[in-house]
Image 1 (tube, rainbow, N blue to C red):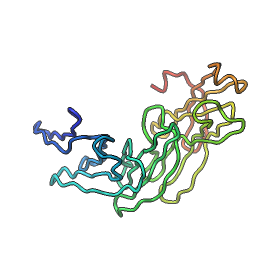
Image 2: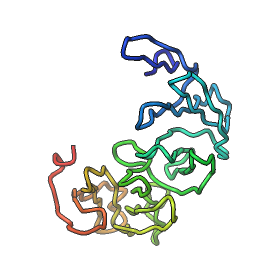
Image 3: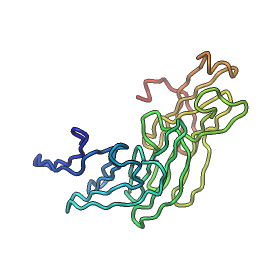
Image 4: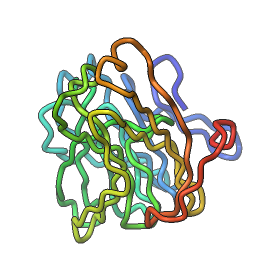
Amino acid sequence: FIENSSLYFSDSKNNKTKIVDGIGYYSLSSDKTKIAYVLSLEKSSLDPYFYIYHISDKSTEKISSETEITPSAIDWSPNDNFLVLNYGTDVVRNAAFLDYQNKNNLFKIQLYGTENGKTVEWISDTEFLFNEPQKVKPEIPAGSGYSTNISKMSVTTKQKEILKQGTSLIMYRLIKNNNGSIYFKESSVTDSNGWLENKINTNYWQMDTSGKNLKQIEESTTL
């Protein structure tokens, strides 16, 4: 937990241990043995590193992220083999994927964040969903001119599949994955001026991880 900009760990006996001051973001591993974290922008001065705190022996690893901008979020994959660092300063951001086991930087992608604030939505130990920026003509006069796709990608093969593709008049935004059911939002306009005039029609949908079995749902279903 964070208290006064410092990161702490508390065990089952409520013993509190300070890990670091000037914390930015952190993520507890699925096996609850490690905490990955990045420092705040003020503390790190664009420090291109992230850190792994090992709860058992209270040791800390310092690992280069090879990013030019300090990450603004960090997350583990379900099996704790991979880490995702979210970084950038624009609405279209970047995510760097790292193989924690082998300490290798794998690849980077551009993305929008999900509606629930996560960088990506994992659907298995190696596959994830993300909101992918889509260049369109004519450009959308919001969101840096991009539309958005809902895409699926493998960390191991780097193969990507677009499940829902945005256009100049339609944007898709991933909300969450829940046991193989993908919930997403569809925003559409009848002409380009609709984006600026806020004449946007919004619908909510559900589909499976292959992009099939599409079903329209009420917004409350996604909460």
